[in-house]
Image (tube, rainbow, N blue to C red):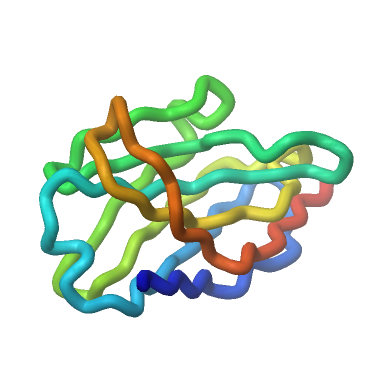
Length: 123
């Protein structure tokens, strides 16, 4: 079983930066190949959308809405996934979820989810 624990988000002003983290409970998980982790977000009344995904070789893909401002990266020594968010906009306000799963970046099935952390950006 893989448990994911996100850091606390927060309420910030537009234009600032914020970093989210997600700690993986299963020590060996991040050392496996053919596994991926990702960040998703969901706003009220909308479906959860994929944001960024990274595989065990640090290959990544980004949603168009997050390209250029958000960066996903991981620290396997710390068993932690990160999301660096820069130049935040009010439309980035959402519940952010960390996810993990087995497979390549093209085939990953996200089976494990964090509890979510709220990020609110005010103008």
